[in-house]
Length: 427
Ligand code: PMP
Image (cartoon, rainbow, N blue to C red; front, side, top):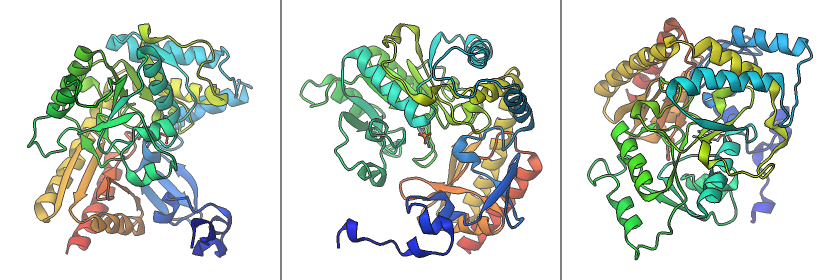
């Protein structure tokens, strides 16, 4: 039988999702409910059941569902006939976003970045970052890391680790060389020993790279946290060898780890930064590529895209920056709530063999030696009204990404469900 003969069993099911939506759908399989409305940290299904959301649109809803402050800015904008689709034309909404981003985010951090609108998805910003790095350096090859995830388009996929996702490309994925992420050898081998050795050895076979692309915490890869000193050493290595450093902050940026940018804690300044997911604020598609001023070698239109001017997302992005980033209340709350999750997970790790934990801020993972346990915990959690997802190469990590705005009571409620589910699975 060839793939072309394959008739998926579910294609004749009696609901429209099974009947005509592609087999490629995935989250809907783990969370079999039809959702109708949402508010803050909660979703409601059409049969009236409430679900607490510990996944927050894979990190696209850091400020919760239908955040009232952002919603009112959006509704006002729409009702005033503000521009909806603007290509890359200058608009009032875009000017407001750029001015606010400069004042609230860049200036206070001493960052002199230019801002590119690369198209609205995470993969769009990653593609633009890779293209720019290649154009600036005139080199082809990129260094990526084991268990990295950067998106599903061919360039982004070429620097992604997951073999199942890579196989989906159907063609060779080239010009990327994986290096071990922090702690890949459980601390046994000195970090960067291999990387700096092959860079310096003219017989190593490594082409001189244009850039290194790294996540400070690998979200899809299993909540693998790079230590601040590892990130600093990586930044130093890149600077010494004139290799551009790209930090992919699509999932960990916009406050997920506490500070607005996830690399702030390490005190490094990447050459290029990718942002998407929560930068739009309201769950509306928006991405930004930030780069040092001297790297802005693009010719007009050399990278483009029809949906770069998602003006309603500019409006909600601006409102989110004004509401949450003009003081440090959100950042402090994120660190405090993250610590609360960590304590709960440490207790579970102490209570049950084969369970451990890792994370930063409000991205925390509960790691199971037996990957099927992680799936079972998420299945039980769903039955009890909690949405949580697995990540990692074998889906062995229950990954928590609650909205940063979640209330303490809701957080406690969800953690109790997870603790009970873990106890039931490990009993
Ligand atoms: N980079 C990272 C770090 C991501 O986590 C993701 C999405 N999970 C992407 C890029 C790709 O984003 P998108 O799905 O919007 O293309």
